[in-house]
Image (cartoon, rainbow, N blue to C red; front, side):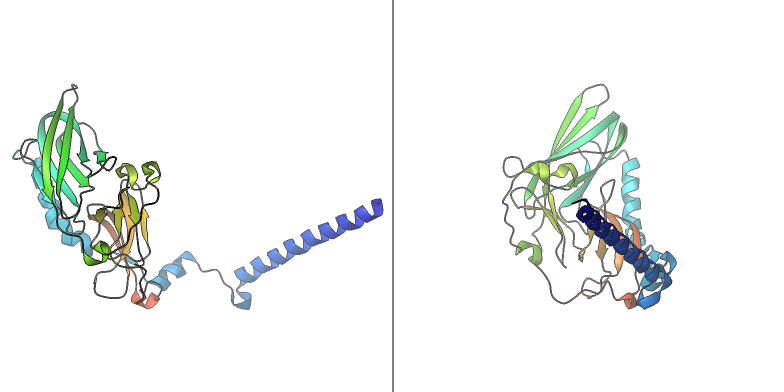
Length: 282
């Protein structure tokens, strides 16, 4: 019995040594470039995809960004008569930017009233107590007179509330005709931060987000292919294209839900890996 046990143990040990040796040999083959395998350096990968940092979109948005910054410093707008801009960067039609000043420092939150129970969207505006307020509104319904509540909490404990109506336009064809079925209304499992929305990114066309009723509450007019990755501070990494009628997705941008672009990388069309196919999953 002991002899049989020793034979089995020897066979197991031999198998482990054989597997380890084979894996070590395979790694060396890759590193040495034998049998067609070779690990590319970071510099070579960058050269192959031909990426470069550009400022095209930031420059296009520079005029409106400066306009908003100027409005923030102005004393023209207060809580009773705020500045309201629907689709502030022209790529997110179901968002708005609200700007106003308060006489004392305060923090601001907002609520977009839902059509049904538990579909209202509330968010606290990031930042410290301030007299200058930029409120990014996310979660408006399409083709609807949205009711938005702005809540101002002053440092002394006093609260002010402002009710606003924001009218939006209709959804684009490829979102309007999309079939959305909700099988689980557990909003605690939904994405997009405290907005309680689920982000949907198809093979091509406009990415969008829905609430627990399956109602569209956000979308981008920029076509996105495969990649729409959440980052920190409410920013996204999106693979898109400069020409929305073209077939090649070679622009990687860092953007936010309102559509403001913070960084943009352009890839060479020769790389080929970012080319869109003509077939679509809708």
